[in-house]
Amino acid sequence: MYLRISDDPEGRELGAGFQRAACLTLAGRLGVDVVEVYQDDTQWYGRGRPAYHRMIADAGARRFGTVIAYNSARLAEHRGEYEDLIEVARRHGVRFAYVASTASEATVVPAVSALVPIVAAVNTLRRLAPDLRGLLADAAPAAEPLAEGVAGFVRNATPGLRDLVRQSAPYVGRLSRSLPPLGHAVGTLLSSVAPTAPRATTVVADVIDLAAGQALFCAAMVRRLSRSYVTARASVTGAGVALNRYRRG
Image (cartoon, rainbow, N blue to C red; front, side, top):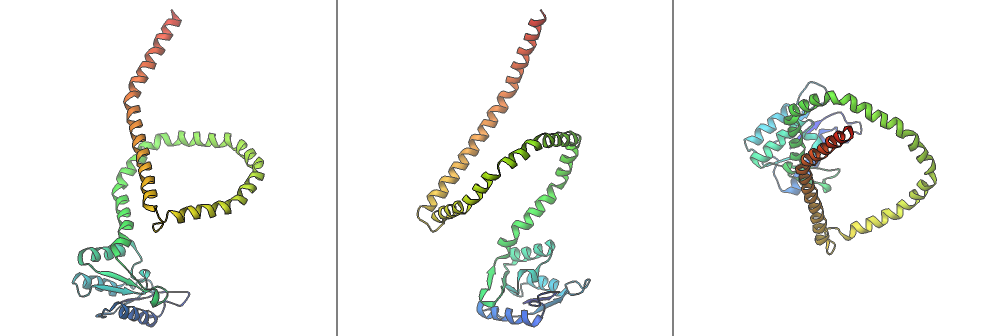
């Protein structure tokens, strides 16, 4: 069991006794014995979390198979701590049980499924950082002209856009009145293709097949254009040179 005292303006999670009682109720419902209680006090900056690190070490030694806490925020605050939890879940099969607002709402969640995507995305971005820096450095000479072009576009398009907004006001009101019934219709459609609805699997499969087909078609078109572009460009350039010579002659 892990308890952490911290500054809580609402006063619901501040007391260790409150957390302990809720966690013990959850342990009883799960049918597990509490072999150790780890408690940190992070109300004051600089104290660290010695009990947390001891708990991670004990998890590595397989002293227990489940960690119970009042909620996930009691366990982890920073990315490195999420990585700790993922590691003990992966290597030692530890699961994490959290108490929600009441013990009756307790849920047991595998840490890997809940946290891996977040940490994996962060690590991927960390690995790509040098490449991204190089890309930005290469793009720097073109950034200022591009920014000027965008600024010119905005300046030139703004007057027409303002006229469009002014003239569209009555239609916007009509559109706003039509949105609630449209939302109802969309909700009905989504309910009809919910996982428990009949023919839902067929509808989802058809949508995925359609999207995949469109993606393959676009990829084929891009490949075809990339192959023919150089030849077409050379032909057009040659025709232009010949036409200029004919005019001069």
